[in-house]
Length: 483
Image 1 (cartoon, helix red, strand yellow):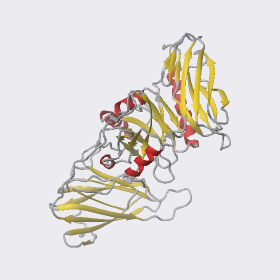
Image 2 (image 1 turned 135 degrees about the vertical axis):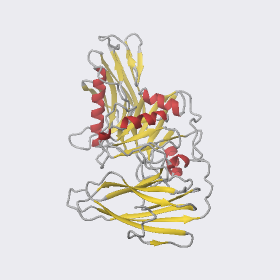
Image 3 (image 1 turned 120 degrees about the vertical axis):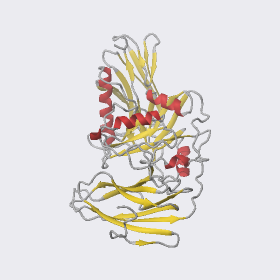
Image 4 (image 1 turned 90 degrees about the vertical axis):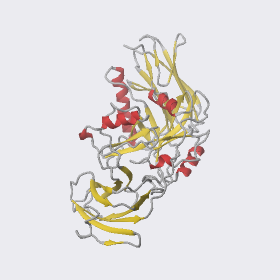
């Protein structure tokens, strides 16, 4: 329904001096498309668009999905997948928004309100058996266009400590999507958590890329990115170029993910599937790992769905040792949205040449990564051979198949925990640490018996039938010569 004919089609016209308002109502049946676009004819002289919406939430039987409807907007450049028309998205986090040249609601991009056909995008996430009835109010405010400030983006490098292990959290949400914290609050929490870097990852919007002015420093690198939130799983685009938007409007059956994974990499980012087995609607990952640079095996406080992801990831390591697939490093992020979510629980610890976007990404791609529940946890893990050979996390110890090798893990800050060494044959050795949680554990094997070794540090079990929650874990050290 175009803005121009809304009134004649039953919409209500109104608004104060210098503005014009229309109301549009409609009904979406069960089985509606993922996205419904309502055209809005914007004439010349408009300086601001404001939109408010609501929809009904009828009672549904237990076990049946009710109504949930997201919203966003595209400008006169159109709604083409991957096109230039995107101007903002708030998902289901807001019931109203505005945008104009000099300012916009968080989640939306300030800029000129040019004449032409704009589109309000509805995303009926789930639709009740009764259908979904919506009610949208659109207000155009007239007057001179304001000035759009030049965006200020974080630098790609901080002072750092040279080649070192850097701690970071690359999956965080602010008021620019469905989080409740401001960027300033997130930066303060990141510093308090002992982090060296963070990545902004709002759902399907880049509006937060310009929201960190004055919040970075020599002690904190801030990367820009996005959580690309499709109906078949979410992917963290880590460290993309500022203002580069990655589209999310496709499912696995559309065979489009590869195109957008490549777009993430062209924009300088990493492709990291998030919480692959989370139970929220649309969160289960269905695109496979062929395009992944890393995978988020630990999301927030450690839960059974992380255990499922960990087991699935470990299977990919086995496949790699048999020559069937590349291996994908494991990372962990907090996915913190609001209190009491803890920024830096967990955190990815990366061995990088310096504290910069490129160096961190290189470290993650190479698997020089371990994951910890907090900065209180310290860890060192390596495997050595009888002749002084040495390999660290993410590396290969190139020794003969029968050579004895020694895995050594030193850990601190995990009271009451147990260390395990896990290989392609399973969990082959476990031992309790001293009550302090500080200690060194060694174990010997050969490449004949273990194609890789990785380490886990776990708290006592809390759920019957499952191992204890993770305190820290490493990526593998591979054993034996290639081929």
